[in-house]
Image 1 (cartoon, rainbow, N blue to C red):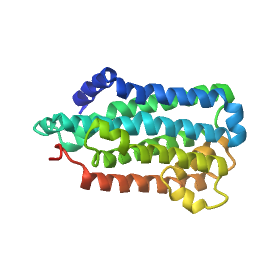
Image 2 (cartoon, helix red, strand yellow):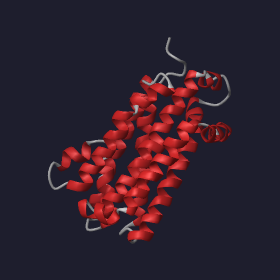
Image 3 (tube, rainbow, N blue to C red):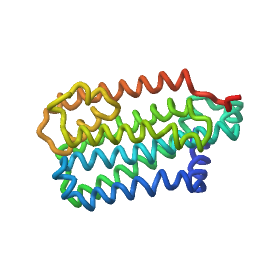
Length: 239
């Protein structure tokens, strides 16, 4: 697994498209939100900024790059060759996904640290870390599911749009309007419960037990996504 991850990490730094989606876009958007934090905190809250930063990195840096990577490795038959080795299917996928996951976690951590330095520390950093990990797990699951219906790296530019834009739209909706109205609907949408969890972690004012319950919808999406991935993922190009 780690040998695959090391090879994949090298490929990431050689691929300009992945570099742009993994580094440039998330960092640029996050920098803009932090720079204009006074405006966005009035629109939503400081927790809203943290949630948008987290989902920007998760959607573009992790989700999109993972789908693109898996589609590319399938197209050039690299996935097929890996299955002829002693590594298990789970180990192969873990090795391919690990570099993007680590990069995304480092990015989110670094950007949130900068945000904390600019606007002040979150009310509950540990709960914020739990929210980040849950979101990363959800985005990986969604990436595996989307990769099952993505034929090529070019096709990934289309297939990833609904989820990547959708989770950011949901995060914006929940972050700006809160969950006083349509709470159940917002929490059941992908990213809705995770956004509320970030809001509670950063802004405070919510009981810990009420916040931890929000992990259930997020991990439910992980389960649904992985279930779809197991049924739809292909190791060889479609003929």
